[in-house]
Amino acid sequence: MPDGAEPFGPLPAAAPPLASPPTQHDEPLAARPTPLFELFHRVAFLILLVALAVAVAAPAMALPKPPRPEPAVAAAMQPTAPPTREALAMLDAAIADGRLDNARALLAPMWASGVPDVLLRAAELALAGGSLPEAAEAFTRLTDGPLAAVARQGLGIIRLREGKEAEARPLLEQAVAADPGLARAWNALGVLADKARDWPAADVAYGKAVAAAPQDAGILANRGWSQLLRGHHEAAERDLLAALKLQPALKPARTNLALARAMQGRYQEAFLLSDKASLASDLNTVGYAAMMRGDLTVAEAYFNRALSLNPQFDRAAWANLQYLADLKAQKLREPTAGPQPRS
Image 1 (tube, rainbow, N blue to C red):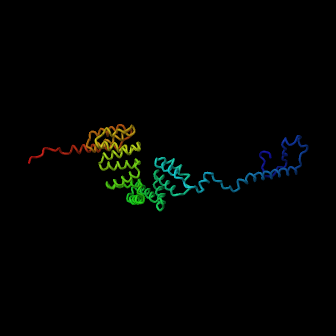
Image 2: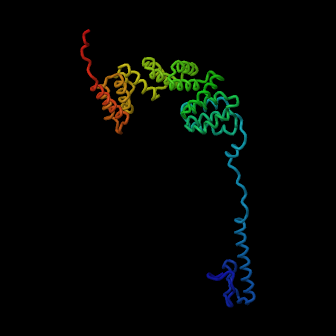
Image 3: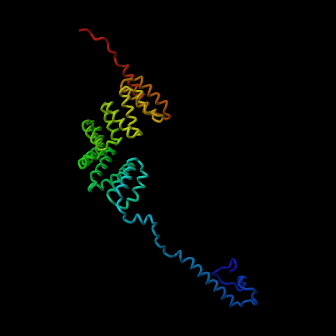
Protein backbone atom coordinates (compact mmCIF):
# COMPACT_ATOMS: atom_id res chain seq x y z
CA MET A 1 0.00 0.00 0.00
CA PRO A 2 1.45 3.41 -0.94
CA ASP A 3 2.43 5.70 1.89
CA GLY A 4 -0.43 7.97 2.94
CA ALA A 5 -3.27 5.66 1.67
CA GLU A 6 -6.28 5.20 3.98
CA PRO A 7 -6.37 1.48 4.89
CA PHE A 8 -10.13 1.34 5.52
CA GLY A 9 -11.41 4.24 3.31
CA PRO A 10 -12.83 4.21 -0.28
CA LEU A 11 -10.39 3.06 -2.92
CA PRO A 12 -9.28 5.66 -5.50
CA ALA A 13 -10.58 5.25 -9.03
CA ALA A 14 -7.20 5.06 -10.74
CA ALA A 15 -4.73 3.78 -8.15
CA PRO A 16 -1.47 2.42 -9.51
CA PRO A 17 -0.99 -1.34 -9.24
CA LEU A 18 1.10 -2.92 -6.46
CA ALA A 19 4.30 -4.19 -7.93
CA SER A 20 5.58 -7.62 -6.94
CA PRO A 21 8.94 -7.80 -5.27
CA PRO A 22 11.70 -7.92 -7.86
CA THR A 23 12.97 -11.23 -6.56
CA GLN A 24 9.73 -13.02 -7.48
CA HIS A 25 9.86 -12.40 -11.24
CA ASP A 26 12.67 -12.06 -13.72
CA GLU A 27 10.53 -9.99 -16.15
CA PRO A 28 8.06 -7.11 -15.59
CA LEU A 29 4.36 -7.69 -16.02
CA ALA A 30 3.39 -7.62 -19.68
CA ALA A 31 -0.06 -6.05 -19.27
CA ARG A 32 -1.86 -3.61 -16.94
CA PRO A 33 -4.39 -5.45 -14.68
CA THR A 34 -8.08 -4.67 -15.11
CA PRO A 35 -9.87 -2.41 -12.55
CA LEU A 36 -11.83 -5.44 -11.21
CA PHE A 37 -8.65 -7.36 -10.58
CA GLU A 38 -7.14 -4.29 -8.96
CA LEU A 39 -10.13 -3.98 -6.59
CA PHE A 40 -9.91 -7.65 -5.68
CA HIS A 41 -6.22 -7.27 -4.97
CA ARG A 42 -6.79 -4.33 -2.59
CA VAL A 43 -9.56 -6.10 -0.70
CA ALA A 44 -7.37 -9.16 -0.24
CA PHE A 45 -4.58 -6.96 1.07
CA LEU A 46 -6.92 -5.30 3.57
CA ILE A 47 -8.12 -8.70 4.79
CA LEU A 48 -4.49 -9.69 5.26
CA LEU A 49 -3.84 -6.55 7.35
CA VAL A 50 -6.86 -7.20 9.58
CA ALA A 51 -5.77 -10.80 10.13
CA LEU A 52 -2.30 -9.64 11.02
CA ALA A 53 -3.67 -7.09 13.54
CA VAL A 54 -5.84 -9.76 15.18
CA ALA A 55 -2.87 -12.11 15.41
CA VAL A 56 -0.79 -9.43 17.14
CA ALA A 57 -3.54 -8.36 19.57
CA ALA A 58 -4.74 -11.84 20.54
CA PRO A 59 -1.84 -12.74 22.90
CA ALA A 60 -2.17 -9.41 24.71
CA MET A 61 -5.91 -9.93 25.20
CA ALA A 62 -5.52 -13.46 26.54
CA LEU A 63 -5.66 -14.04 30.32
CA PRO A 64 -2.14 -14.39 31.78
CA LYS A 65 -1.19 -17.67 33.36
CA PRO A 66 -0.22 -17.58 37.06
CA PRO A 67 3.57 -17.34 37.43
CA ARG A 68 5.40 -20.33 38.76
CA PRO A 69 6.97 -19.65 42.16
CA GLU A 70 10.70 -19.33 42.45
CA PRO A 71 12.40 -22.50 43.73
CA ALA A 72 13.38 -20.84 47.05
CA VAL A 73 9.83 -19.59 47.65
CA ALA A 74 8.35 -22.95 46.73
CA ALA A 75 10.69 -24.66 49.15
CA ALA A 76 9.77 -22.24 51.93
CA MET A 77 6.07 -23.02 51.41
CA GLN A 78 6.69 -26.69 52.14
CA PRO A 79 6.96 -27.99 55.70
CA THR A 80 10.57 -28.58 56.70
CA ALA A 81 12.19 -30.80 59.28
CA PRO A 82 12.92 -29.33 62.74
CA PRO A 83 16.39 -27.78 63.01
CA THR A 84 19.16 -29.79 64.61
CA ARG A 85 20.60 -29.02 68.04
CA GLU A 86 23.79 -27.86 66.37
CA ALA A 87 21.88 -25.38 64.21
CA LEU A 88 19.99 -24.02 67.23
CA ALA A 89 23.26 -23.72 69.18
CA MET A 90 24.79 -21.68 66.33
CA LEU A 91 21.74 -19.43 66.33
CA ASP A 92 21.88 -18.97 70.11
CA ALA A 93 25.57 -18.03 69.92
CA ALA A 94 24.91 -15.45 67.20
CA ILE A 95 22.17 -13.82 69.29
CA ALA A 96 24.28 -13.85 72.46
CA ASP A 97 27.25 -12.30 70.63
CA GLY A 98 25.12 -9.55 69.12
CA ARG A 99 25.60 -10.79 65.54
CA LEU A 100 21.96 -10.12 64.75
CA ASP A 101 22.23 -10.10 60.94
CA ASN A 102 23.94 -13.48 61.09
CA ALA A 103 21.24 -14.71 63.46
CA ARG A 104 18.48 -13.61 61.06
CA ALA A 105 20.17 -15.48 58.22
CA LEU A 106 20.39 -18.62 60.35
CA LEU A 107 16.75 -18.31 61.47
CA ALA A 108 15.26 -17.85 57.99
CA PRO A 109 15.52 -21.49 56.76
CA MET A 110 14.26 -22.79 60.13
CA TRP A 111 11.08 -20.72 60.17
CA ALA A 112 8.99 -23.05 57.98
CA SER A 113 9.39 -25.88 60.50
CA GLY A 114 7.02 -24.05 62.87
CA VAL A 115 8.42 -25.73 66.00
CA PRO A 116 8.37 -23.91 69.39
CA ASP A 117 12.18 -23.89 69.59
CA VAL A 118 12.32 -21.73 66.47
CA LEU A 119 9.61 -19.38 67.74
CA LEU A 120 11.58 -18.99 70.98
CA ARG A 121 14.70 -17.97 69.04
CA ALA A 122 12.66 -15.51 67.00
CA ALA A 123 11.44 -13.95 70.26
CA GLU A 124 14.99 -13.77 71.65
CA LEU A 125 16.22 -12.21 68.40
CA ALA A 126 13.50 -9.56 68.54
CA LEU A 127 14.38 -8.86 72.19
CA ALA A 128 18.08 -8.53 71.36
CA GLY A 129 17.21 -6.14 68.54
CA GLY A 130 15.04 -3.96 70.78
CA SER A 131 11.72 -4.89 69.13
CA LEU A 132 9.93 -5.31 72.46
CA PRO A 133 6.29 -5.58 71.22
CA GLU A 134 7.26 -8.23 68.66
CA ALA A 135 9.28 -10.14 71.26
CA ALA A 136 6.46 -9.95 73.83
CA GLU A 137 3.95 -11.35 71.33
CA ALA A 138 6.22 -14.29 70.50
CA PHE A 139 7.03 -15.06 74.15
CA THR A 140 3.33 -14.90 75.07
CA ARG A 141 2.53 -17.62 72.54
CA LEU A 142 4.92 -19.95 74.41
CA THR A 143 3.75 -19.40 78.00
CA ASP A 144 1.42 -22.43 78.01
CA GLY A 145 3.79 -25.01 76.53
CA PRO A 146 6.99 -26.83 77.46
CA LEU A 147 8.96 -23.59 77.08
CA ALA A 148 6.78 -21.66 79.54
CA ALA A 149 9.57 -20.95 82.06
CA VAL A 150 11.98 -19.42 79.55
CA ALA A 151 9.09 -17.56 77.89
CA ARG A 152 8.15 -15.97 81.23
CA GLN A 153 11.81 -15.06 81.72
CA GLY A 154 11.73 -13.21 78.39
CA LEU A 155 8.45 -11.48 79.19
CA GLY A 156 9.74 -10.44 82.61
CA ILE A 157 12.86 -8.90 81.08
CA ILE A 158 10.71 -7.01 78.57
CA ARG A 159 8.46 -5.60 81.31
CA LEU A 160 11.53 -4.56 83.30
CA ARG A 161 12.93 -2.71 80.28
CA GLU A 162 9.58 -1.03 79.80
CA GLY A 163 9.64 0.18 83.41
CA LYS A 164 6.69 -2.05 84.37
CA GLU A 165 8.33 -3.46 87.48
CA ALA A 166 5.09 -4.63 89.09
CA GLU A 167 4.41 -6.82 86.04
CA ALA A 168 8.01 -7.97 85.71
CA ARG A 169 8.44 -9.40 89.20
CA PRO A 170 5.75 -12.16 89.16
CA LEU A 171 6.80 -13.28 85.68
CA LEU A 172 10.43 -13.61 86.76
CA GLU A 173 9.54 -15.33 90.01
CA GLN A 174 7.36 -17.84 88.13
CA ALA A 175 10.24 -18.46 85.72
CA VAL A 176 12.82 -19.31 88.40
CA ALA A 177 10.29 -21.34 90.35
CA ALA A 178 9.80 -23.55 87.30
CA ASP A 179 13.48 -23.57 86.33
CA PRO A 180 15.99 -22.43 89.01
CA GLY A 181 18.78 -22.41 86.44
CA LEU A 182 17.50 -19.41 84.48
CA ALA A 183 20.42 -17.01 85.03
CA ARG A 184 18.91 -14.07 83.16
CA ALA A 185 15.74 -14.23 85.24
CA TRP A 186 17.80 -14.19 88.45
CA ASN A 187 19.85 -11.29 87.12
CA ALA A 188 16.67 -9.32 86.38
CA LEU A 189 15.40 -10.04 89.89
CA GLY A 190 18.71 -8.66 91.19
CA VAL A 191 18.14 -5.46 89.21
CA LEU A 192 14.65 -5.17 90.71
CA ALA A 193 16.10 -5.65 94.20
CA ASP A 194 18.68 -2.91 93.54
CA LYS A 195 15.91 -0.52 92.52
CA ALA A 196 14.10 -1.29 95.78
CA ARG A 197 17.34 -1.03 97.80
CA ASP A 198 16.65 -4.55 99.05
CA TRP A 199 20.27 -5.60 99.41
CA PRO A 200 19.69 -9.08 100.92
CA ALA A 201 17.36 -9.96 98.03
CA ALA A 202 19.92 -8.56 95.58
CA ASP A 203 22.66 -10.74 97.07
CA VAL A 204 20.49 -13.86 96.73
CA ALA A 205 19.45 -13.08 93.16
CA TYR A 206 22.93 -12.22 91.90
CA GLY A 207 24.39 -15.23 93.71
CA LYS A 208 21.94 -17.54 91.92
CA ALA A 209 22.62 -15.81 88.60
CA VAL A 210 26.41 -16.14 88.89
CA ALA A 211 26.10 -19.78 89.96
CA ALA A 212 23.93 -20.54 86.91
CA ALA A 213 26.13 -18.61 84.45
CA PRO A 214 29.63 -18.04 85.90
CA GLN A 215 31.01 -16.95 82.50
CA ASP A 216 28.43 -14.21 81.94
CA ALA A 217 30.31 -10.90 82.18
CA GLY A 218 27.12 -8.85 82.20
CA ILE A 219 25.83 -10.52 85.35
CA LEU A 220 29.13 -9.94 87.17
CA ALA A 221 29.12 -6.30 86.05
CA ASN A 222 25.58 -5.87 87.39
CA ARG A 223 26.56 -7.33 90.74
CA GLY A 224 29.53 -4.94 90.80
CA TRP A 225 27.18 -2.00 90.23
CA SER A 226 24.98 -3.29 93.04
CA GLN A 227 28.02 -3.19 95.35
CA LEU A 228 28.81 0.36 94.21
CA LEU A 229 25.28 1.46 95.09
CA ARG A 230 25.86 0.27 98.66
CA GLY A 231 29.27 1.91 98.97
CA HIS A 232 31.12 -1.44 98.94
CA HIS A 233 33.84 -0.21 96.60
CA GLU A 234 36.37 -3.00 97.08
CA ALA A 235 33.75 -5.71 96.48
CA ALA A 236 32.58 -3.79 93.42
CA GLU A 237 36.14 -3.66 92.08
CA ARG A 238 36.50 -7.45 92.39
CA ASP A 239 33.32 -8.16 90.44
CA LEU A 240 34.10 -5.57 87.77
CA LEU A 241 37.62 -6.91 87.26
CA ALA A 242 36.20 -10.43 86.89
CA ALA A 243 33.68 -9.16 84.32
CA LEU A 244 36.40 -7.43 82.29
CA LYS A 245 38.55 -10.53 82.36
CA LEU A 246 35.73 -12.35 80.60
CA GLN A 247 34.78 -9.47 78.29
CA PRO A 248 37.47 -6.76 78.09
CA ALA A 249 35.42 -4.47 75.85
CA LEU A 250 32.43 -4.27 78.22
CA LYS A 251 32.13 -0.50 78.47
CA PRO A 252 29.84 -0.18 81.55
CA ALA A 253 32.21 -2.41 83.53
CA ARG A 254 35.22 -0.26 82.55
CA THR A 255 33.45 2.95 83.57
CA ASN A 256 32.25 1.52 86.88
CA LEU A 257 35.69 0.11 87.65
CA ALA A 258 37.14 3.59 87.28
CA LEU A 259 34.45 4.86 89.66
CA ALA A 260 35.11 2.08 92.21
CA ARG A 261 38.84 2.86 92.29
CA ALA A 262 38.31 6.61 92.42
CA MET A 263 35.85 6.25 95.31
CA GLN A 264 38.71 4.62 97.21
CA GLY A 265 40.88 7.69 96.53
CA ARG A 266 43.03 5.85 93.96
CA TYR A 267 42.60 8.49 91.29
CA GLN A 268 45.58 7.60 89.11
CA GLU A 269 44.70 3.89 89.05
CA ALA A 270 41.21 4.81 87.91
CA PHE A 271 42.66 5.74 84.50
CA LEU A 272 44.57 2.48 83.87
CA LEU A 273 42.03 1.26 81.29
CA SER A 274 41.32 4.68 79.76
CA ASP A 275 42.05 5.34 76.10
CA LYS A 276 41.74 8.34 73.80
CA ALA A 277 38.06 7.67 73.16
CA SER A 278 37.07 7.23 76.81
CA LEU A 279 39.41 9.67 78.57
CA ALA A 280 37.02 12.65 78.67
CA SER A 281 34.23 10.48 80.10
CA ASP A 282 36.61 8.87 82.61
CA LEU A 283 37.84 12.29 83.75
CA ASN A 284 34.25 13.26 84.46
CA THR A 285 33.65 9.98 86.33
CA VAL A 286 36.76 10.33 88.49
CA GLY A 287 35.98 14.00 89.10
CA TYR A 288 32.55 13.00 90.36
CA ALA A 289 34.13 10.49 92.76
CA ALA A 290 36.55 13.14 94.02
CA MET A 291 33.67 15.55 94.56
CA MET A 292 31.73 12.93 96.53
CA ARG A 293 34.83 12.33 98.68
CA GLY A 294 35.15 16.06 99.36
CA ASP A 295 38.30 16.56 97.25
CA LEU A 296 36.80 19.60 95.57
CA THR A 297 40.03 20.99 94.10
CA VAL A 298 40.88 17.64 92.50
CA ALA A 299 37.33 17.30 91.20
CA GLU A 300 37.40 20.75 89.61
CA ALA A 301 40.66 19.98 87.82
CA TYR A 302 39.24 16.76 86.36
CA PHE A 303 36.00 18.40 85.24
CA ASN A 304 37.83 21.23 83.50
CA ARG A 305 40.15 18.81 81.74
CA ALA A 306 37.17 16.73 80.59
CA LEU A 307 35.63 19.85 79.04
CA SER A 308 38.89 20.72 77.28
CA LEU A 309 39.26 17.22 75.76
CA ASN A 310 35.72 16.71 74.60
CA PRO A 311 35.22 18.28 71.13
CA GLN A 312 31.51 18.53 71.87
CA PHE A 313 29.89 20.27 74.80
CA ASP A 314 30.10 17.86 77.75
CA ARG A 315 26.85 18.47 79.60
CA ALA A 316 27.73 16.02 82.38
CA ALA A 317 31.04 17.72 83.19
CA TRP A 318 29.42 21.17 82.97
CA ALA A 319 26.60 20.14 85.31
CA ASN A 320 29.14 18.69 87.74
CA LEU A 321 31.11 21.94 87.69
CA GLN A 322 27.96 23.87 88.53
CA TYR A 323 27.21 21.49 91.39
CA LEU A 324 30.81 21.80 92.55
CA ALA A 325 30.54 25.60 92.56
CA ASP A 326 27.40 25.31 94.71
CA LEU A 327 29.25 23.03 97.14
CA LYS A 328 32.10 25.53 97.41
CA ALA A 329 29.72 28.40 98.01
CA GLN A 330 27.89 26.41 100.67
CA LYS A 331 31.15 25.54 102.37
CA LEU A 332 32.14 29.21 102.46
CA ARG A 333 28.83 30.13 104.04
CA GLU A 334 29.22 27.60 106.86
CA PRO A 335 30.51 29.18 110.10
CA THR A 336 33.94 28.03 111.15
CA ALA A 337 34.09 26.11 114.36
CA GLY A 338 35.56 28.24 117.16
CA PRO A 339 37.08 27.11 120.47
CA GLN A 340 34.74 25.20 122.73
CA PRO A 341 33.51 27.25 125.67
CA ARG A 342 34.87 26.31 129.10
CA SER A 343 32.48 24.87 131.57
